[in-house]
Image (cartoon, rainbow, N blue to C red; front, side, top):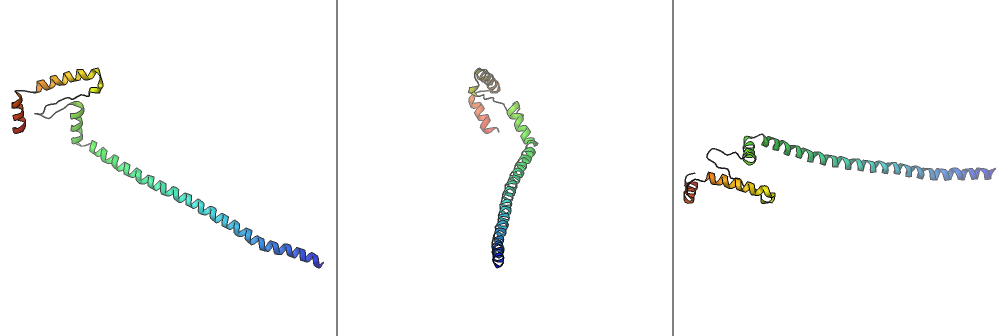
Length: 134
């Protein structure tokens, strides 16, 4: 009978010494898993905050461009560039790109006619007017 108690006592002692180690390992595993999860979440948060600041900067730039597009100076500039408008006393000169093929020659002829119609007087008179009468 004494031997039976010794075997069961060894089993209990072995269980009492191993169980805390197993429990400690399990707790460390759970803490490590939680820490890794928190690290991933914090990394995602920082990436999203960075994206938010980039989008806010983009929105500010877009708002500034929108305000600029509403100004009279922008409208006047676009009218001059795209529609060929000019202020009173100004003359419009059209310069075309040579890489547009056959249409480029036609546009060059039209621009030459426009320039010839706008120039009045001799060359020295035009220079004199340009330099001294503005």
